Length: 114
Image (cartoon, rainbow, N blue to C red; front, side, top):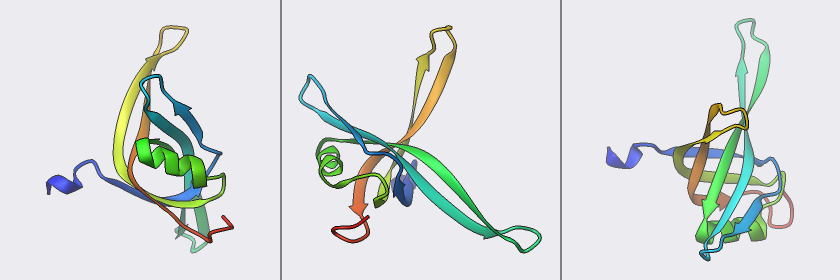
């Protein structure tokens, strides 16, 4: 059961071109948004679709792959974990930010297309 603690798997589409940063310590990080869609029937039998947005961060080799191959609209599968960070606004309010830290990625779709 240890392997399924804090484990996230998502399949969706990249919502924006990834922002890749080379840090001073030599590490590379990629950040991007990802949309997943949920289709279901409501209580009246009408088909509904709901889009959920996720913030994704990838480090090292994964970030390099993202930088080279991932573009807005590309379908991708992510396996990783949830991480929460906090920051303070200019007004002094503490805000929390939840993101998925990618451990594995799989680029889906055609080689030349999205």
